[in-house]
Image (cartoon, rainbow, N blue to C red; front, side):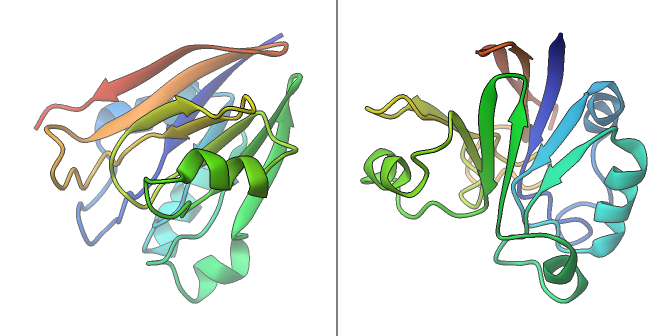
Length: 167
């Protein structure tokens, strides 16, 4: 069976946007699993995503406090088909990221992270796939807001696509 994934991070609702863009809500409803790598900012967005998503795998970020930290872990893990996924908000500076993540997450196949608002897709020397979907609502120095979709088919992560939202 194939699982359709939506990966988000750094939504910062309602600080940076009143709501998620319509294309993101459309993907929330299409996805088998929504992965959110933190910085929700308001628990109302967590409630809304939980209500509309089939499955949510989420963590808190450095801008999430109170109820968000009570309801979400710092690190989350889930086996999707034959792949071990992890989610965390921060992985530290860009320099040395692959080496650090290999050491910290030797049990994972894919690690989704956020914090920088900069899309990232690399594979570490030990084979860990690192994915940062950027932010759909707070593009910072990026040309567009972004999110990622992918398919998990058995032990294969395929059709990993970075989507740019209109400005």
